[in-house]
Length: 209
Image (cartoon, rainbow, N blue to C red; front, side):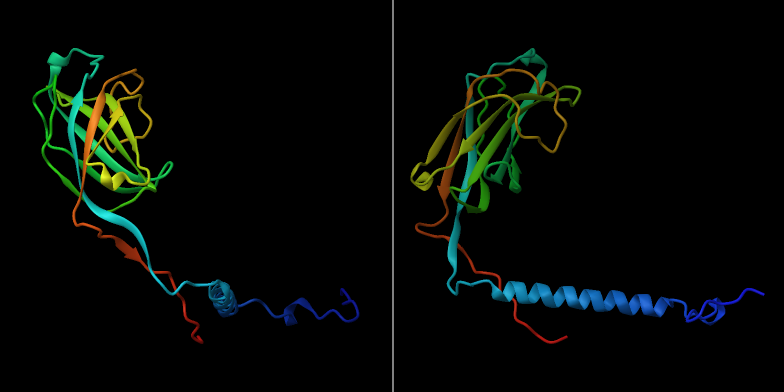
């Protein structure tokens, strides 16, 4: 018979960890984390007033000029633009639009305007020129990056050179490694005069659990 060491109870008399104890421990840990998070957020200074975050505008691509086609442009049935509004410098994406299809391949123009709820100098606009072939393949024809600065609302149109592929698009494109050239003209029309989108600070009030 094996003798038990002094002060050590037999294994048959030892308490085992129950599943209910584990659940209660998890709940207690979550409550503690929640309380610490609330205290941290409440300790931060808050501004009572709201501040402008951007202006609502109508955005549209006017045309593309002097586009260099690295492929035979006769295989293209139409071209269109993918427009993305993103936070500087690399995102995230805030809004995404596409223009209508244009069948004038050599000198494409567009009329459709897109409504952007909030646009500011903290945003960049990326316009990707895409061509569609008869077999529904999408070809990369160039990408323009419009970097907005203070006073952009006073400029009714902006122009940027067409460059290499930098930002991805939703669709897979062919020829993203090609070197292209040309320019794209963008039109920005504020919806209202001296109108801004205002945002308020986030607040959390402590309530006992």
